Image 1 (cartoon, rainbow, N blue to C red):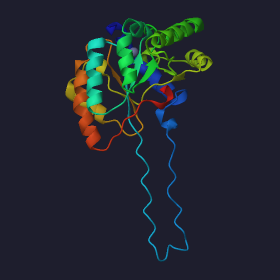
Image 2: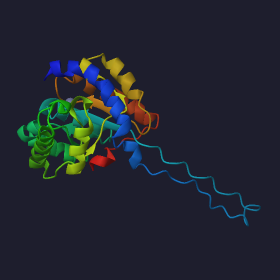
Image 3: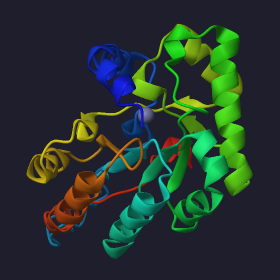
Image 4: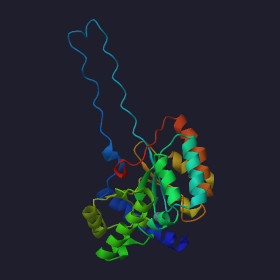
Length: 244
Ligand SMILES: [Zn+2]
């Protein structure tokens, strides 16, 4: 869907990344630092070796999948995630959620977070404030019709955002979520390349991929290959906290 739209992303992504530094609620902010265990008693320290400080828990990686639901491939992706015991976040289009509510219900039932990717994937920075609001509200309603819940977070299409988008989100109590690692899977690089990009994610990173918007066979194959390796090296995964 909308390859032409995606081609515009290359220019907008720079804006998106810059804005990510400003107004985005990053997943990292939801992670509380765990203080080191400093409770070893000075009176016993001479005779009893203090217990080693527990290692701080490793921040999870937040996989996110945009532009769905695309029933056949979204279901395939859900199976891959389930096989690996990984929960992720789906930024779904309200229009598609209304058409395929059963797929969004499957995402939710499996413990994934659902975010609002607007009603029909417009570039919000080209709309009036009321137009932005309509896209976000309608998208949220489409998702609520499928899940019974209005999403608490949104991702603007193309990552294109500005002060008006942020202001509408604030008024609607919706948190904007962008990303740290862009796999650029919509450009259809090889599965090997996608595996490498996935594996470049570090603890705390939000990773952008797609389960809709076109043929995502390579994206799904890459997730299937990368996840066991990432889990083996100690990576953990979680839904974006701001979306729960
Ligand atoms: Zn999108």
